[in-house]
Image 1 (cartoon, each protein chain N blue to C red):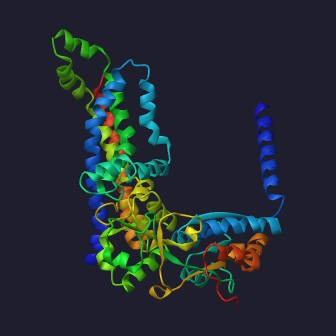
Image 2 (image 1 turned 135 degrees about the vertical axis):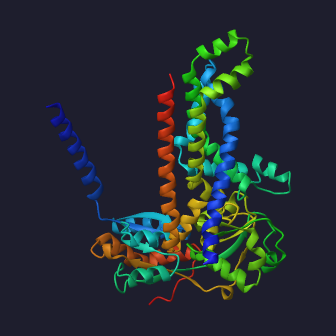
Length: 228
Length: 253
């Protein structure tokens, strides 16, 4: 029973840590990107936006395949791993973070971008006439107004990382405690005909997914109710 | 009126598609263990040339296919990478009685792209590498054989932290091919090309023979192409292809 519970809970813990770190990184780098996409008039803005949205359409195996090459010893990932004596970023937790950040990026950037765009020019112009610097206006006006967008982006980014499978299967190597995440663990349990364990995890995922969708809907409803 | 014309148009296309693909000869869906991919493609081509029937191949891990077949997957023939899953299917009543036979015996190889890296069992003992790739020992028989061989050499405990798993033998091969793992246990059938590097054919006494069994599934009992494929697989033409890909043949019964 002890062995069983560690088999069950280690992937759950790992998945939560992975999704948490991924979400944090995505909020940090996704916010300036979303701001730029919402405010810029550059002609190649929509091209950049389309590139970020690619993981929505591509099968994870495509991203996984190219990541396997770029993370490997002949790619930049191998060079980075070389800094601490490794030879590849594949099969590492760090490699999974890189993959998850790329894979979940549109789910975080899109809601934040929409929230920034919905603010419009007016509040920022008012802030400027009140002599707020652009930086100050961003933190005191734009960010608070876009809060529902941040919330929805964070929830979706987290949830999407929890739900990824094809990517992890391709670059993870199924190492317990490091790359064996929830979805891969379920796959293994099904393979091994351990349907009881598969059921526990899979049913948990259904409850989790339902909670995520419900909470995103509630966030959206609340923001449209209190906004404008 | 417009709608009725559209319906007629779609129906005509559907009829054309259905008849044009099913007219020439019968067709069968075959689930093929990933290690047998290349050989199976060549056999399917020869099968079509000689009988006119078409074998549509799906590749994957044997364990995955077993689970899918128990849940009614539309395969008529199953070429497993082991003997136990076809036997299990027969016990479950999902396979045609007496149709099970060994079509190939697989060979395990330790392979690296780096020349001179793989010398033999001393390579495993020295463990001078970061990652060793195998395929999932739960789902794929070549993974189980690799673990068995490492245990026989008493290096499994020491090597365990360095193991990375592919879901299938194809993925285990890719990990080595892309250089992400320095070496890995793969199937000899995957190395029939002129891959550079170094290899060690793992001695048979280190692991139980990988008997790869084929079975006619119950849904294929009445399928002309399925039964013909099984017959063809036992014939000299297919056996020559199987041998060419580095498998050992069972004594023909």
